[in-house]
Image (cartoon, rainbow, N blue to C red):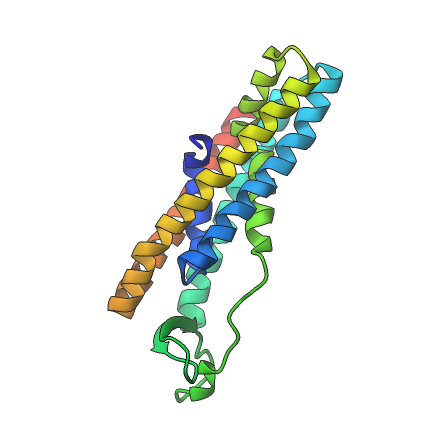
Length: 221
């Protein structure tokens, strides 16, 4: 759970959470990040346990740099969507359903199209969060976690370690992503400019952290 609070993890999931409109949508987002992270750790962990080796430091640095590139792209995409596509919120209800907020774009429109309010709410699991989790599982911080596998006395203990670590990361990130949605939802409910400002801050933070990570990786190499 502590590992889920790494700065680059929080930045990536915070950016992903800008797409979530409720805790119900945010929870699977965090869970899928944890699943992707655990799958990668499991793959690397099995190799370490069976071969008695460890991830080369040079490879860990390169993977950390790729995570930085991913953070830049995630942050840039959020800012692009917000500015270019003119995304904003409206409160409405579907016939007899409960009132709720949803975001949509008016890019290329000269007038407001009421049909934007006729939409389907996303039901697919957030595959993007899965991909981000997989990428984070290959990063340098995860490689440090894998070092502890060399202290276990059996393959079974190592697998159990990875499973428990994965469960902790999934629970920790699910709770964190749900908590991140609360201020975003409040900002959207209160005023669109507040939501837009908070989204831009998150996007720029992700871009800045990603650029710093890439720069640091090149310095190490």
